[in-house]
Image 1 (tube, rainbow, N blue to C red):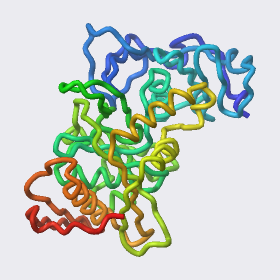
Image 2 (image 1 turned 180 degrees about the vertical axis):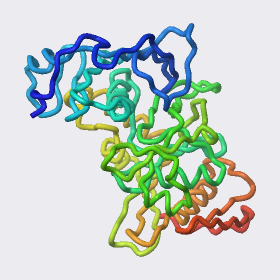
Image 3 (image 1 turned 45 degrees about the vertical axis):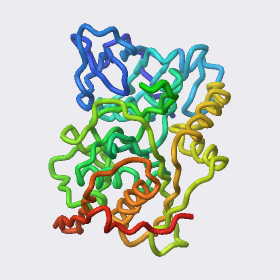
Length: 360
């Protein structure tokens, strides 16, 4: 039982630190008691948007009126617990408190801090968090959404291997603002320079896991630093591609999603979407989803379960962007193929030679 693992602590007692650290991630200045080596360093003089600290949440967890297995609602936020790791409290979009459980490992605590905690905090701040990966193609952000295992991170890694920049992996922060021409636009804010890839994806992309860190001891999923191909500035969102593995197709198929269906797609792929109703954010989420649905081009990609089709998917995405005129892609499309043994073959095709497949 989780309750048996709760230990009373005072702030800093479980994992003492001597100072706060400054970081910048998700467009936010962060002041943190816990070390977060995955994040970009922040300015010591900056006013923090959020503070992350250790604290004793045992009594607050046990006394909460909400008795969901791993979630508790509070008057000003939400708590959730990960067995054998920690209890987390996210308040008012401005603070995250961590109560480590017995024998917790700090690097595993960070995994949920930078995922579920930040996704919840973004909601509290009015930023729409989508579940997926985003890359930059000729000045525009393109998001790859899907369920776990759909191939989002693998596809983003393939694009970075072709020279495109990564904006974010896992949590996609989407906010609305006015551009230089006075138009309302959706923007993707960069999170931090790291991807999460399974061993199979690393093998397919010709990447070596020898120097990479496992995300969890029992998982063959790894943290992959992406500092060399990371975009540090927010980028206007131009397109969304939903990835849908299917037994019904033998090759990659692409279809355009009409506006009415876009609402349910965005809702389905909102990060930790079960929190929307728990936090009373239904109206905000509907408005944000409807606004995004009207601003971005949305497509659904059906891919076969086998063989590996990430290269074909990337080609279809570039062809679709070209054919719909949503961006002026580079004059040459680089097609990079990586086999299981890691050998890469690079071929170049001029834009005029790119075949545009039929769109439905």
